[in-house]
Length: 254
Image (cartoon, rainbow, N blue to C red; front, side):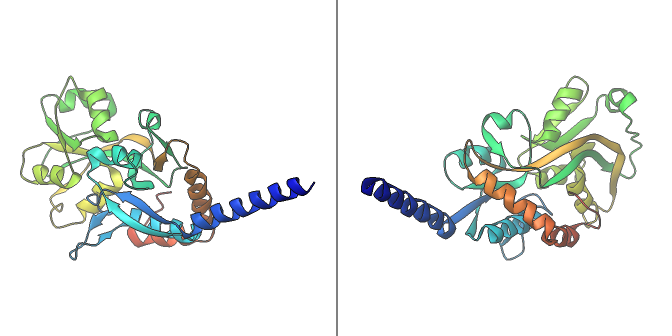
């Protein structure tokens, strides 16, 4: 009996230590920082955006200190799996392919894919006649994104696809006329169309894909996933999520 009590005491101490260690741990969140308004750098070089605010709110609920680690988009999942950061909150679409490499939380927002092109371009985007309308066009998208994959899967034999390392570089080629149109997340396009650079451009047609679920990625089997899910539910319930949403969009993106 004495040995059993000692075992229980040791187990309790171990559990308490593990819990307090998690509470005291400084977590690192991975972010691309080139995808406004979700994540980008301001004039002072500070990483800002919707993803940052949501990440900080989740950390506050989990009662842990968090710091931002930036990473190029192409290598962001390998960086997570190489322990460069603890979780990845960078507007990443939840896909079956990515789920082979990482685990995802519940979605923290939903997006759609929609084309943008110059206002002067007569480009009628309709799913029924999409291939005929875009035949011979040069269409851009960010590399290693759902938009890029959708173009390759649906229009790869019809259009010339140009893929970019960042969304910002894709917009630069659109404004310079090197591509005829871009396919990207609706909410990112929405923000860009409000800018001075995007004032001569507009959405073309309705979204071509409307079920883009965005999640936070963690390493396979990491219990942090459940902690993040719990915190996400809490910030939605207490109104924190809505305050962050309203800071960036006049409509709900949840």
